[in-house]
Amino acid sequence: MMPFGYNGKILHVDLTRGTWRIEEPDEKWYRTYMGGSNFIAYYLLKELPAGIDPLSAENILVFACSVVTGAPLSGFNRYMVGAKSPLTGGFAETEAGGYWGPEFKFAGFDALVVHGRAAKPVYLWIKDGAVEIKDAAGLWGLDNWQTLERLEAELEDTRIRVVSIGPAGERLVRYACLQNDLEHYNGRTGMGAVMGSKNLKAVAVRGTQKLQLADPDKVKEIARWLKDNGIRVRVNTDGQANLVHGRNILPELKGLVDAVSVSLNAPDAESYQRICRSSFGPAGYQAVLDFIREAKQHIPSVTASVVTLPGVDVEACRLIAAQLGVDFRIRQYVETR
Image 1 (cartoon, one colour):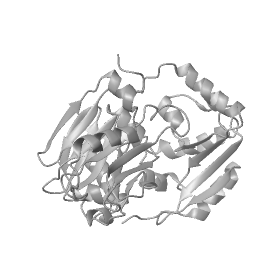
Image 2 (cartoon, rainbow, N blue to C red):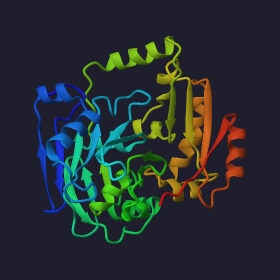
Image 3 (cartoon, rainbow, N blue to C red):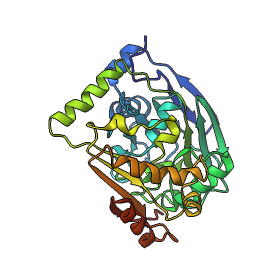
């Protein structure tokens, strides 16, 4: 039986041949290597010949989750990316938060190993175990924001999660990074350059599978332990959890969460839909406002945040936060190239 927390599947994609396969390691392998950087080290040591050029097709690029990636606890959204570094020539690993890691896990895999180099720009589309290598000629040259918008339109799904490179990665800048959710970065070590060297523009994922936990009640117990031992727990959210779950989940967080930061991002429903493209349509923005109001009843500290995207009326958002009686935070928009 596969240990809880894993899918039992490693996805290998060969961009040179345009093929993919699924490796299914046994329980002993998973218990030995666990996940994250250990997965990366295993595949780099196993697959890479000594002395290769980090920007050659021989290098591999590994995206790896841990056993707890996707668990319903604050901070358990991390994933790692690794390869031979074009910046240092040595072992490289870099991690990021955001939604991409859990979504990849929910799509059915524990790690992605990218081999070879595509003859032309491509992106990967992974949805609930299905894999496609798709043409990315129309994405090459775009920044990460434009890439996300284009993929949401092309795949007709605003709930996809995308990790991508911008022009710096395409041009093999040796410190280029990867970005997901427009604000989470796999920085350091030049993994964006490795991705660019493979003509891989992005990896888009969508998953509906649930992470199987050995003891879900123990997860809640751990959250309680963290709280009782003075560890402050903060949750970052888009404010649409009640729509997703079909019920008011905030009472369940009372006593477990100290602070919640809700992405307001717009002063009205039309602007919100243009920026955030909620899958719930116009109801999405109202849900955010209702979530903030309700959160005040159950969580000690509530903050509404806004990203300084072009065209966003920050002061109008500040006024809405004041009217709702919550704190306000500005998050600077940084365009990655």
